[in-house]
Length: 335
Image (cartoon, rainbow, N blue to C red):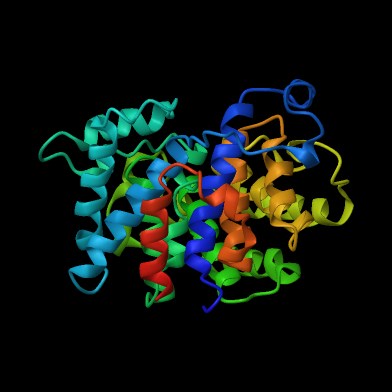
């Protein structure tokens, strides 16, 4: 991946986060009143990020630690991920309006001897599951099974709802495909096929008995609920890419992004409206009525994976918070 896709994706994620953080919780008219025309939105001089980038770095560091110790397997990944999540939870930097599910789950993960399946919130499919999963799509040398398992496990530690698991798997898959050079015009179709292939596959190796915390009669029934919600939103996305005007709020087409499958779809929509104009895609994502920082951070991950590091203006990347940590992780995986 000579275009330095990992660096491009991680920096793009943080830039989207920093651009969308000040507009989160605002409707589009308020954003336009505050920022002017959306196509001219400027990155704040102090480009602070939210918990989205902080949690992405936690996943990236946990993954790096696990892979340094040998072949990536569930137990080998679960321990460093859990430690990274608890470190984030305890950090004074954790003051960026993080989600309730992440805080609840991390407090439980902190308890010695508690099975992670008892910490993950099986009722929650918040976008916290997949806003942070990009590293799983970027780390080199993993099999499809390892990537899928790792994407679902990192979600399940906090967000155990089957739709959160499926959306995280699809998000990592999209990042991977784009980093490998898959043409964006065929991306939604590829993701649909992937979802259909995995629809009733519950990965016992990676998830253990997580499904028993739900009301579902079987593990296959449990996981299919998640894939079916993702398939429904991918259908909406496929239609939106053909019909939506770039001038309208993207959340009207594919959802506000507070939940995992909508964050995936709306983040992808903004990227697919402007596949070769990454900064415009970020601006469209940040000027939206929904969870604008999470939507924009996913848009940035997709655009950066597709176009590489050169997608982003140097005067933006130089001032984004955590730039050193993001670049170091990206450089490791691009090498």
